[in-house]
Length: 336
Image (cartoon, one colour):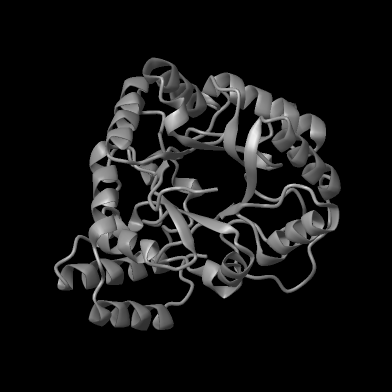
């Protein structure tokens, strides 16, 4: 799967965004050489019973308006089991054949297309170390859908032409290697990508997944390069700009702890000391990592996307990188 080094993430189109704003963002992205759109049946943020699937609908409407479906590498995701979203598919959001097929038919209908280039498992369907937790000290229970059934379903969807490739998201090194081993044993479609968070406040990916990505050719699609906006500096001193992700969905941020804000402030100050916009530095750091295939900023405005695009032309100096690494050694996992 070939993608550009920069991706447009649609994940944070919030309830305040109109369809016309979404069309304008995609017009801008397409005109500026961005060829990869990432979404999910769950979006927009904040997901609710009434809004779930609306992001896919807006993208589908844009495809029909512009005729540019063939110009875009399109990614979406099937929602896994999660107590907070148990209204999706009547609460039966496991990665069984029936659930996956029901999910993809809904996504294809909303996206107004007959295929998805990359179809991702939004998070594991098993006992796993959940969001915003670092490491584990005892085995997780092996519950959830039969992974052999999940893989067989994804392989069948590739053969049917409904998806071109499949990937995982919010997955661990063991989880990725388990999928690889299953495909090697059966000859079924191999996992192509992993979409996990990666930013200056959360570099957990470095400690295992990066090695898997590089040695096993599993592309990292790095989401939340600005740590949900915290690395821009806009949330410092308790600020909560109207319409921002933290204002809309405060309980879902793993970056807004006192410690997270303290470390974010240090990165913001470091960028400014080197004459850089903090967002530019944060984006550029993600782009330069050898295991990052693409970065997925979740901009809600064209101005935010422009900053992310501008950062693709920035090279961080050796001096600045040394300072970044010094901060990382002092504050290794402030926001896992």
